Image (cartoon, rainbow, N blue to C red; front, side, top):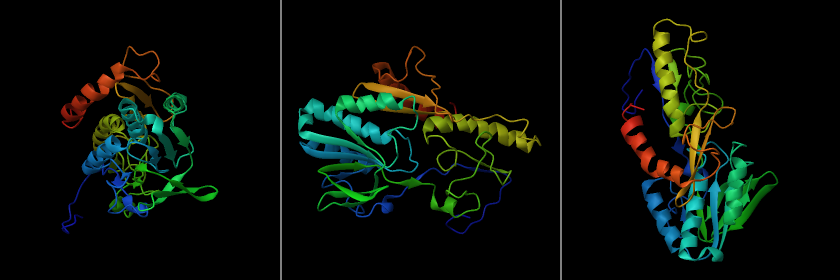
Length: 310
């Protein structure tokens, strides 16, 4: 059923509804983002305001926040922290800044293969990691952020705060029969067929697949859905005849201007490197990876993925 009330029948349903940004779950931010030291670059205007805030910041406490739940591109909250650090160093103000990365998760990165390398990036940049602190409210007037921890609520004062908003599957998914207990479309992790409705398939951020929510992941999921839907329509039993998705995802983590680490992994969180083919250790940020991020991936996305060609 559409918002207009129109009903559309189907033989097969493919659900790829994305992720919604739940800014309302952080008290105090409504109408305050983009000024007075409070930023979030998850909208076009928000990204512009964040860059303006980074350029004008000259000293104090800078906090970069990641929520505890699933988000689009798990490395994104770190990327903006690293790019801000690079800009502040080039501007000569970094020594006057106490920079912290605060995450609601118990570790700074899910894959244990790449995590030590990213911890080393933070040590090199003198960014203090703070784990298991989930942002619940902000007082923009007093510049105080409140966090939920296992020991109760705690606060931090800030001069600059960038936060990744909490995120979830769209509300219309949560309230539907398609959702599991977490609110995401309940699909088989290999075939991407719905666990309870054989003529429904799901992929992308709104699905309950236990892997990072990235464009790279959906690029691998899409051919699986196409193949398995067509086979099911032909009467095949997907338990014995199907194409399987193994959880591939990748996070291109920009660590500096001109450097990027390409973290690629599957359901096991072990590395599954595909790019670049000449790289011996994918945990090393390189200029070659930076070129992939800035030159190759936009072409792949707009000219390949969005046109159904890659």
